Image (cartoon, rainbow, N blue to C red):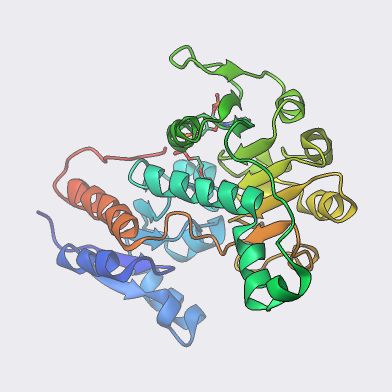
Length: 314
Ligand code: A2R
């Protein structure tokens, strides 16, 4: 093994896993620094590795001009400027696969909450409304519905399996039809939304998918339709979503992700009856966050041992 490298930790991830990096490297925690500018100026040039919760624009690479590797905690890396990293010869690794099950579980939790109003009904019960106003209003089925999955990739496949177990009729939309699955493919997202009761988004963020779940898609999903977003906040036109939820063109939504996290668009926060919001926690169990952290650890170790990176994205 070569000498321990200096790792600039831009943003912290699951601590028990992040701390394991100290076995391999000298870590420098930018997010803890009182004067981040001075810290970066001092430490940045010493670091050949950067660790981040999916954020590394060009300016950060400028501040660490000797970077060779970016450890991106998360499967999505839309906050990392990949073309810029590639141009500079910086490799980027992410944490795919180990989070598939957790994200798919959360998608189902949001489907169940969105259709059966688990969260709203909890509020109703706790507010003492049951004895006064009577039974909670009827909700909509999960089983025997049509679900359209936007993005039948690694996580999308796990969601599809769970939906089948819930006796849902599953179809999907993405750019390429898969030959290895026996599910209906829709070349048009609007058409899939029109034919679905529930739409689950699980595609990467970034320019190519920005606003893909548009007002037209939401209208096609319709007054009894449910949108679940466990992808990235940017893939949905959230202004249109707020409008459609308020005026009834869309039945409901359940979201785990937002365009400007940790801020949630105020227009969405105002809506309580038919909208469930969770704070980007789909992969956030102890088990999965540890596994994700260890993917980064294993990548760094491979790099230091001169072996190929395990999950390089560029
Ligand atoms: O379009 P395809 O055939 O490349 O299928 C991919 C699909 N996808 C898209 N679908 C429609 N329009 C697009 N512009 C578009 N771009 C990509 O998303 C593929 O089936 C799926 C992504 O699958 P994986 O690469 O296996 O990603 P994984 O691990 O399932 O994670 C998905 C995303 C992450 O990027 C995070 O943003 C989020 O879930 O947590």
